[in-house]
Image 1: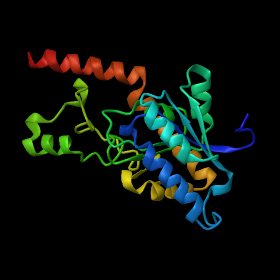
Image 2: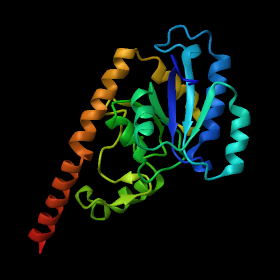
Image 3: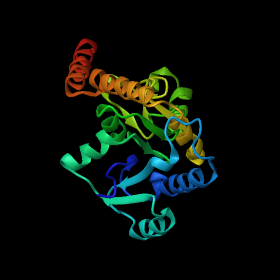
Length: 228
């Protein structure tokens, strides 16, 4: 009921320190108090609510954050099924402020739902030069993961372009500069964000759908058979 007639930005993940939620709340509060009336932004600050959805894995951490977030933050707990997809599909955009992720499935889900994403360089959807990717690159091409084999590492798939900013369906920022990441997304018009979401949906269909996954798996088995 609290969201009736309002627009929201969505965080959807487990409530854990790794997810950078404390930094997101700090950026959210600063943005609300420091920004001049929202002039020049595609979205007005006054009309936005931050919705935090996810299981509280670290109860003490969650309780501390609830006290700091204020009334403009709504905590829903974990959402499943229709509620989960309604939250994703009707958000203005998703924000995943993680320090690191091995994949970040909620980013793919948000893009599949046609909603753009703000995330950090610590995820494989960011700029991707994480420490483990750097080590792989420095060891040479013979060590690089083959995306056909689905060789995931902390920081993503080496050699596979998952940069959502290059795909023009999101914004990447440092985890310590979430305020600017949010502002950049809010500077886009409603039409531009819809276009970003549409590009994200097509990207998910092309590379991450069941059909695309099956085709990559078949190609991988064929490659193994040819080498043998």
